[in-house]
Length: 307
Figure (tube, rainbow, N blue to C red):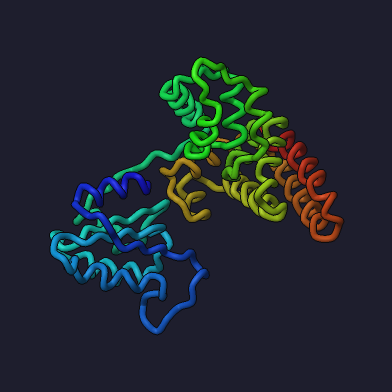
């Protein structure tokens, strides 16, 4: 998304721009105005052009975090802004609050950037290896993705030291050089559990625990069981979507809804009971027992709610 934003600003002849990082909910205190302090610089940025002529640039990052009142103010500014004086780019990983979303759709252009998945990273690695005139074994590709996830910047940096012309990169060479684990999203663990793949789920758990806290894992898994429980009792997908605050057309909602028939009510009860006991164990037992507690929970959930 940042690359596409840079291209847009560059095409508008903008070499420098103002950047606003919208804080998450609760990350910044409310002010006397409708805008939180980190968001307030948006106002002068949208109201005035470049002091040296031409167009000024504005990059708003994490626009999905804007509060409703902030979105209303910014929508008014965007509506009256001179498109020849300022070029604004809003980066968002979710829905932008109304009425700003509406005015951006009317006044601007929406560009979707596909999220990089591990299978995309695998294809990217193949092309990157060719560009470096590097031969790489399929097993080495698997190991690299296991270490760095879908972070193509890190994958590229990892390839460079291995790029000796004519040399074939093996899995052993990668394992010998790199020992880190990817900082990967939690849904990969949820997918492995849903598919009943115990080995992969345990690997995903180990990867996450390199960077995250055990209680984050428990909170996430509890949320997954809660969503499955709601899907099991909902009369239709629209009702379920309303209960979880989503849309029936989005992939996360459809995925849970389609899986509802694979999970029995007694399995959900056992999962909730196990989560409660694991939570108590992690909060009261020595830290060295936390990993094995989560490993046992992960295996059990693979068997209870996996396919």
